[in-house]
Image 1 (cartoon, rainbow, N blue to C red):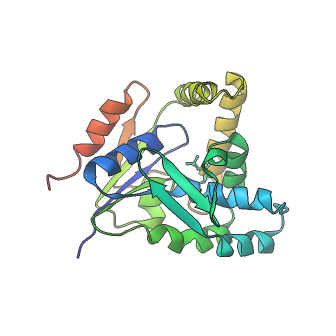
Image 2 (cartoon, rainbow, N blue to C red):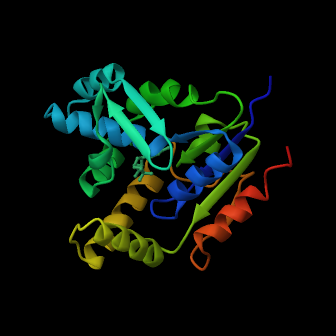
Length: 220
Ligand code: C5P
């Protein structure tokens, strides 16, 4: 049985998470937030006080971690039974995730965990290498981006709403550093798949992006 896959790749802050989650819900498909897998590993490393230069320790934590997802309006993630949803979105978690995500062996260990999300009736997969590495045969591929300034502004608003006090300059420089690390790494760099549709969301609302993505899915 053919299980359709829609991949949405792009840099942080382009709106991938919100768009993917809503599109998956509208289609009634499963949803893979692949960034949350790298983020969960980052949290496990922090909790276990693992030195980020110790690859063997990082790999054994990556292999052993048990992740459970509950997705309704919001994604709830449990790491070894503990709800880590609140810590998933922090800048520290994102920065550590991006550092360990550049390690080839880490990506290899986390590969199958991501492929396992492909289950009937379909999958929306969000990340950096969904269309290029994890699901190269995906039926529909999107590369969703926005200008760095716009992404920083959105992230800043999100953090302010959560009561987290940061400066827009700090967010912009963190976004630029993370983009650079994600694009320049030798393994599975952030890149547009040849057969992906490019969408620049800088001047679009989330609803417009969702409508555009849904228009790519053939009528079922
Ligand atoms: O998308 P999100 O910001 O949650 O991802 C956190 C980090 O995880 C990214 O900066 C990136 O380095 C890494 N990541 C990745 N491959 C993916 C998803 C995320 O390398 N498919």
